Amino acid sequence: MPVELRVPKVGESITEVQVGDWLVAEGGTVQRDAPVVVLETDKATMELPAPVAGTLVRSLKRKGEIAKVGEAIGIMEEGAVATAPPPAKPPELKPREAAPEPPARRIPPSRRHKDEPSSPPAPQPTSSPARQPQSPPAPQPASPPSAGEEVVPMSLFRRRLAERLVQA
Image (cartoon, rainbow, N blue to C red; front, side, top):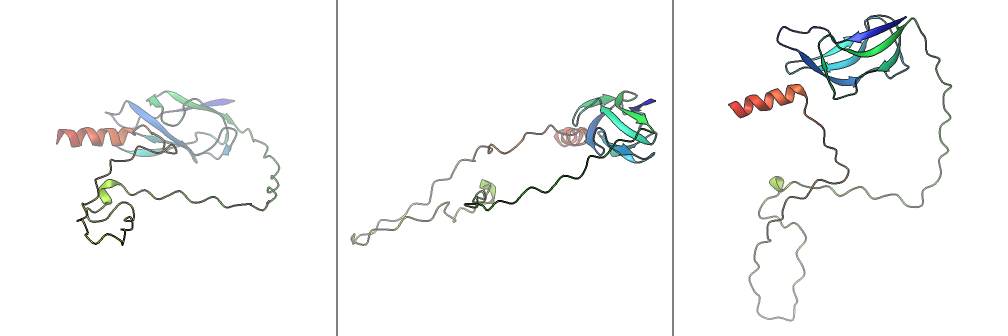
């Protein structure tokens, strides 16, 4: 018998929540009152417990989506037990030809000191008898975000906090 996971009333001024991490994957079994999903509001973060023991058949909302109080965000099947797949064999280890180099650590411009050069100084020619004074290195612009970075929308809590800081 299908049972809907509904967003509970969490306070008189709260009308919507943001779906956080799903603690149980689709097809996963869960006991009654065990946490299934994390819900975030502009005031608090809480876990939604399972209303029945069973299997999470489908999640209707993904992480980061907004849901209204009383809205269904998932469907559970009461008493259904998912069959566990057989344990997978560990992959065979093959020798590596060359280990990849770790990515270079980037230091944000706010952490650099003015007296620290961003690269090692170039060697000066020794044949020149007159030395010219060195000028300080030019400030480097902030580097653009790397390709591996992901833009994540702000949670309701952080959004409300930012609004309050702007007001202050």
